[in-house]
Length: 305
Image 1 (cartoon, rainbow, N blue to C red):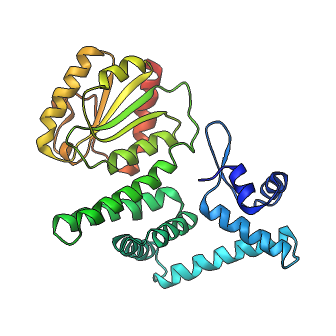
Image 2 (cartoon, rainbow, N blue to C red):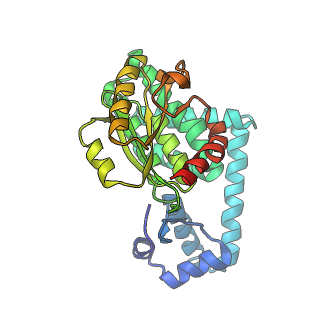
Image 3 (spheres, rainbow, N blue to C red):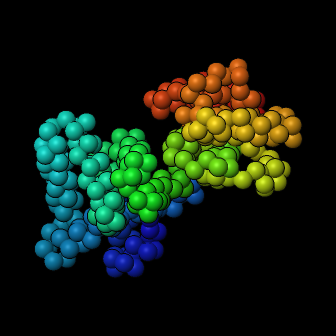
């Protein structure tokens, strides 16, 4: 993601011109930070570069150039859907295979270009749920079966995780919500489900302190002492063998912070009933039900906080 200053320097387009193209013609729609600053994706940069070439070298108006750009994108969408058989599911499957192959061969530029293209066609939520998360599951299975190397698995996991992180600071934070602390306990290296849930919370205006995978217990108490507005701790565990240690961890944190609430999820908790967990919420719902949970539960957490 790039700031407006960086875009101006890269493309030699005056900032006043750039803002006019955005406000009058909707040439590109950059993301916004919580402070209101513009953030431009690589696709935005490519579109602006193309628009500049059309206006300066071809002599056409910016309004006409924007119409041509949109027509070109619509044609790309039609062609991509046609190649995939005309069905969204087939289109996602084709894109998954293309991105997976590019990453498996360490073709980072091609993989990123395909991901950017997917974002422009389907939006970030569909791409994450329908394409990127399944790719991570696939490479994990391939590694366990000996069909992918450790280097390939790490490379793909890191690359996709970075795309998740890019969106964390795009959505504005609602100050009246309590903060959420999210991490995978020590020994738990699978974080994608938790990262996806954290991104969902951030989209809904919640400030998430995301610590990631394999987080040691040391330092968490100190952090919670400093972060007085943390109202919920989210933990994710994929292996059933780590559930007992996770329950012990929550017990110790509860002793230090009696009002702190916990949410757990992941494959390790799929067969654990809520009444048998230290956690207030055992999240076994699919992503389609997260918004309902947020409206019915998190809002109450906000009132109590």
